Length: 226
Length: 256
Image (cartoon, rainbow over all chains, first blue to last red; front, side, top):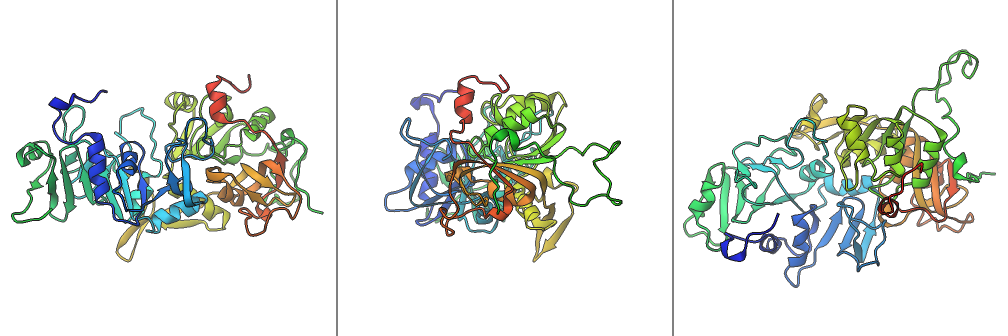
């Protein structure tokens, strides 16, 4: 899959999406970044903020990938890629790692999504296809236990179907768990009244996003400040 | 004198687990006694980090079959856990993520209906093992509430939030990898190779460790011991353990 040329792209690139999400992560947060696009966020944390990255396989204080040939096959992240540690890091066993998650000690988790419902339900582990090998990893623990859940995803699927929907058709990861969604088109908050538009990507209109959203999208309120 | 050290990996998995509750009448072991039921084996590791490859290969050589294996994944390539599965020794996997890079053995058997899968969220798996090792038969967690993985499970509300009942998990054997060990079975680990190993050591009736370094009693600072020796039964030194990714990249299969 190749990115469309700059001239025809509408909205934010993957890097810009990650950069926009990074802006909303408070200084001092303990953060778990999901495998894939959420990992990009670490590259865009504004200067002056210190975040501590948790990886559920037993490390707090995860650093970037090692230089070629300098890694340890036994120092990896949840995506099983080699990583490094920052000063002040700690290692721990799995039950302690998930006590951090389930016990509400991790401030924020950023995950990908197949679908998000207007109630905050998340589906991100299975399309429920018969014959597919089901695999869940730590996603259900993360959404059940981490204080804030951000979703970083394209606004629609490769086939153009909305990913923000009234109700998920895929098997759920968690019920009513998502707080905010960062897409290529907009930033959307999940509220008791449904999807609330927070910000539009440059050059994107409310109507353009609303057409591509599978549920009501509350417009930015008059006089609201960003 | 306590000395849990073994001479070689070949000795490690051979002895059958002793019966926890010997049958009434002092029977067992005589002619006509039924064969022992297939064992449950917990295998440490998250991906290749902490995977006790040499112990798994010794288990393949030993021949036990019909096993239920507990591991976060299902191995990669055709070495270690994937080789055990490929050899047809595993009837059931209990894991959170059976799909991984270079993982083909399990998916093929699963699609052919030749291996059973119990899918467990990763944190629930970790806590089930910890609880089993701590003598706790069940616990409530909010993880998986409202999802297909909660179906058929007892649920209960505490302080207005819904939780599902999950069972503690124990095993006949645990195979784990440590960085350092002494003759008492005190262990330390290497970085993220620790993962499930300390909990599995607690949850298994017989815990077998392969260690990179075997040190004299007293060399491990009591302040840094991660797994106290009481949870460990046997220790074997494997000074130069293979790395799964290197074996897979080299196209190695076990047995070759």
